Image 1: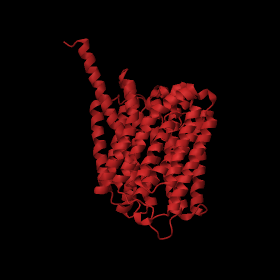
Image 2: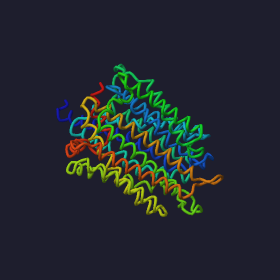
Image 3: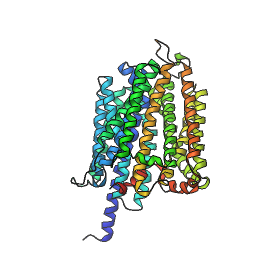
Image 4: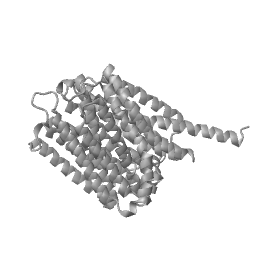
Length: 495
């Protein structure tokens, strides 16, 4: 006969298995990210496309992630979370297989778009942990899930870079397919599924169409500007269409009872300011990451390139994860003591200083690695604090919507940064030349610095005195300051 102690031990083992499976699933988000930046030059060579076109394997994933995250969050409300999590992981597997078997660049893009659905994994996984784990494992598990992505990025960049360098881009995506399939099997075996008959939440289909169309037009317009010029009819038409679609999207969302993105929260000064700063810093960060990987793999014959392999480029991005991981707890502690109005602008300026350093000294691998580590410190010191500001500025029942908006803003900023890096370098590439001039990198890093300086100014103005030490304490209640944690903590709000 089982004793209470035996039952307790069995329950503990079950929860440990659930947490391990969720951490495995969260690691696939990092893997999807690593299948982009370091392999862009390899993709360009494999399919014979220009580097600025190959950059879309990163951009399209971010665009799909920006739209898919709130949609899957809505579909996964309540008891259906585990099923939606598994479905998202299965889509990543399919996307990796499509990319691994790609016979054309168009097929590669389709696969990368499907992989972008995986960006919804972490919020879903944390929501499942919140439902199915008991204290104190729940709190520890949420913290572990939040750092899994940072650690996975550091490990994934060199691994996928090495696979693409030794074989081809297909090898990296086959690795992604196998890894993601293993995550599906693990989650299905360990995590209890909710009932199929759970109540369904309405999906704002018109909002999905308008947001997707607006982002596609905006990013296509920005990308084409490097080739055709900002005054060309095509570019102006695309940007005009993006503006019209975004305006219509805002009008629809403001009047929708169950909006895809709750724009009504932007009436709060701290919310709009924090999101504006987040977008500016996300743009800057993705410009920097794209440029570092690209300059590292540019042939030395250009006079400025380092001629590194994709594997070496992946290793260069490893310090980003290390710097971010180390700086997050320090930033949260500093926010509690000094106030977020001091720490957040300071973190933004650390990122800005990094851009200056990259612009002046990108002639050696060691210089790039050191700058990327500093960039990681700036990233960890800013994005870790933003959830605390937002959650302290909205009613508890609006926390989930507020953090969904924040995640969308960050994903859009990343996609825009990826597209801008292409535009700037394309504008500094002479007719018939395969590679841009070194001056293009200087202009891009200068723009990144300006974006960080603007983000620091916005943060200084947007964070009221009331969001000083108090907001720091709010942020500290969410391990590692990950937005997905706040989204999970607010899971009950949307039911």
